[in-house]
Amino acid sequence: MALENWDIYKIRYTIVTAKVPVIALFWMPGCKPCSLAEQILTELVDEYRSEAIFVKCRADEYPADEANEMGLASVPFIVINTYLAGKDDTNKGKIYGAFPSLPTKEKLMEEIDGAIVEMEDHYAERY
Image 1 (cartoon, rainbow, N blue to C red):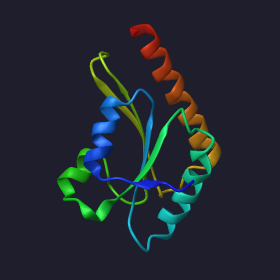
Image 2: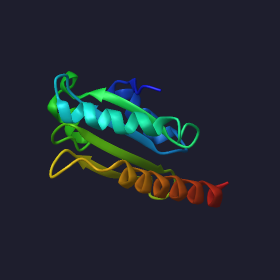
Image 3: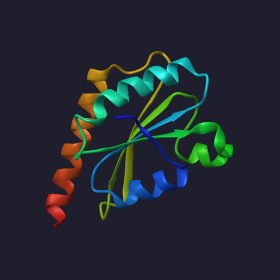
């Protein structure tokens, strides 16, 4: 299943309201590493269908200050967001860019699995 293209505002809102990790790819047209990153994430969508939200966002459609708030420095840019409501309302995110190299599928799976467990544990304690 392909990654759905969301705007940065919907991504921000979903990060703070979802009880599952949000994995966002920031990309630009014509960027070959962006295409590779999208292929890797697309392979993971079905595997994590109910455990995480996967989206992409075109980075060049937003002012630099808004992109910077998400930590965007270059593309491709992958953020694995876990928002832990009530725990100092923290938004923890793992960030990956193209340099020195894109993360492997296995590395992303390891990080996503960790984020899922962290959020499950946090919300199990709260409810």
